[in-house]
Figure 1 (cartoon, rainbow, N blue to C red):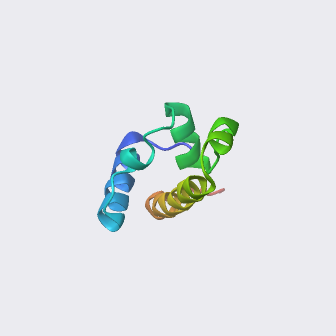
Figure 2 (figure 1 turned 120 degrees about the vertical axis):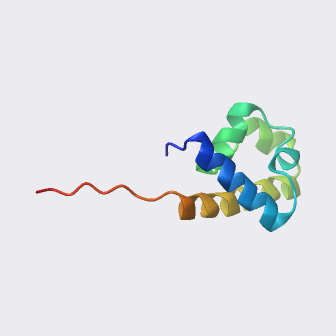
Length: 83
């Protein structure tokens, strides 16, 4: 899924207004790559899964799911018409 930065920022603002907490505070201990994989694909690295408590991992997955739902509403599919 290719997401441009303006769309990502709009999704982040919607998430923060809906849930009241900053995404970066929730994702504070993740690397940039881990953050990107979680937000776009819902995947966590082995390091995070092994080092974090079960509650923290569950919270990250829930947050990721909610964020992807917001992104899905913002991103419009592009269909090509065949003539």
